Image (cartoon, rainbow, N blue to C red; front, top):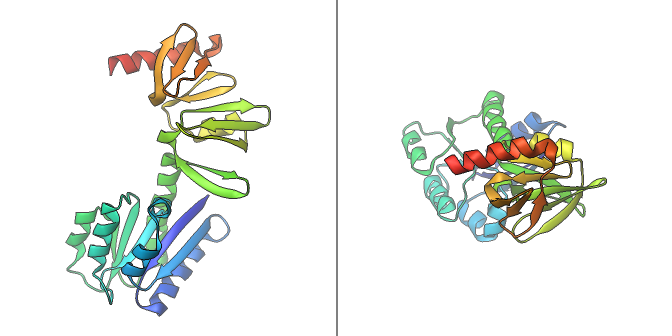
Amino acid sequence: MVINTIIIEDEAVYAEYLKSLLLQWAEEKIELNISTYSNGSDFLRETSKNTLLQIDIIFIDIILDKADGIAVAKKLRALGFQNTIVFTTNLENRAIDGYTVNAYRYYLKPLYPRDIKECMGYVLEKNKKDYFQYTYHGITERIPFDDILSFESMQHYIDFFTMDRQIRIKDSLKRIQELCPSYFIRCHRSYIINSHHIKSRQGNKLILKDGREIGISSKYSKAVAKIMAQRKGG
């Protein structure tokens, strides 16, 4: 799993210190992409909205040369950034400001390995729950589980579908089922579907919101019926 990390810190020495703590935490278990910026203005100017949505965690110093860190965080939230923000500072009296942007933590400098373990562990678990990460033509990407309609097994490959994309990867349906949230259900030996994207059931078929028809095998019919009953009751 790759965790995309941003450090916004105007003290170069401290930025390197924080980066070293992150790499120490990751070691060889997790791949980190770390970028550092000395101010929020450069980061906002150089980062597209699509790139912003791929970032997992941003460490922001509250006191920056060109802008207040809280103000930078507010701009990030206004642009749609919903992932983790962590503030670092020498000031004890600004902690309450972090609540205005739903910051995960507010750490007084210097951070310690236990602090990194806490916030990066949170990000790691959040990513496992919220995103499906895959490698496609040598490029690692991720997509929210909520956007995925279904997974389909094709021999040694998996096709998965969103409303506007079909992507083929080399994987197993068994492994993917272990990764999926509970609202994904197996309806056939070759299919896992997102129950949130079921439009209707017609006999032994499920109609998805993109119009595709997915067969229901007898082995999984009870599980499908249970999900459909829950949807009707909800």
